[in-house]
Length: 258
Image (cartoon, rainbow, N blue to C red; front, side, top):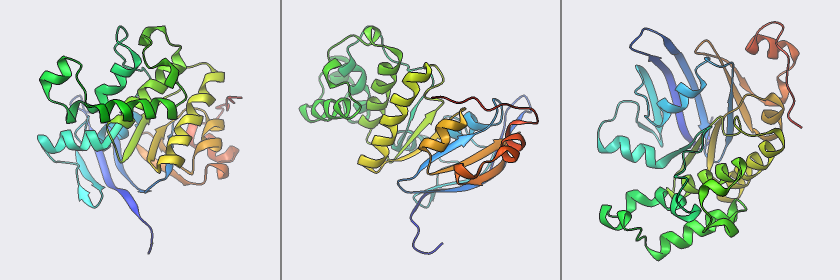
């Protein structure tokens, strides 16, 4: 559409694993710059594989991923590292170094801009430390900067992971089931901060979620995968009971996170 600014255009993306499993089967969709896009589907539908193919943690078998109009689906070597820096990722499990302070964990997002020797000695530029603290403030835990990571709650640790990803200075933030390990009350806190990052920084977010109630509250747009194929794309509020059963299977029951 004329005038639209797309940061990603995915065309006929396929992923077949060495064991023959076809995880993605010709998936195509576009992502607008600054959008909060959510991907839904059953476990095994291809959601996590899709995110990993976008930032090249997995190599796509076929298709294109146009990132700022450049196809990154099959780049090699240093270009793959650059893709992963510009498309940061947070996971269901927080992957923090538990014995290190929160600020040290966040600063690992700046490793690509810091020499190996300085990083080993914990010597980061003052500008990097300042920016890391700003991101901790943004996700509401600036007062925890010098606390050991293992002394934080699960929700706080996920917010550290968000701040660490932001320190990479990405253009896209990928979130793979970011609230799956959290209790329902904490889910909304983490999702609120992801939305804050999206709106205040204008950062494009692509997020896998299980709970449709969260999708309807936070997503600008949603795509649904089933058996590796895209089966729905549009407004999350238009997913009625019939669409829910088509995506999740007949007899599936929606679970609400209040």
